[in-house]
Image (cartoon, rainbow, N blue to C red):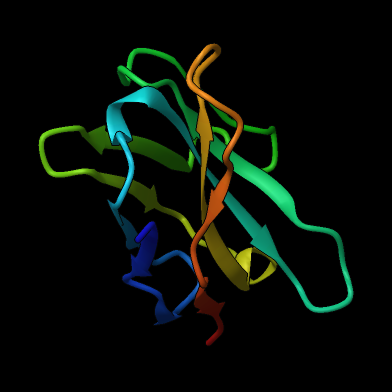
Length: 120
């Protein structure tokens, strides 16, 4: 059974930090590109970070560049999102996403999401 389980969300003051984790099971984690998305109710889901299957390449949109980092531990089947200097506009539900590398099938997986609220 495939599972992506996010954790680490919560309430934080502006300027604070949070570290999200996403624990994967039921598929070959090391063959998947891992991404973090976020979504505010009524808006489209936004990609905020991605990391290659080996962890060697990461990408971020300008909205979070320099504040967010993504990392993964393939031995623990876990991907992390470190969020620093948080702003109220970072408030959203954050989702973990797994996309297979080329030649490894087509199944895409999503976690259930974890709420991040940035407020004084």
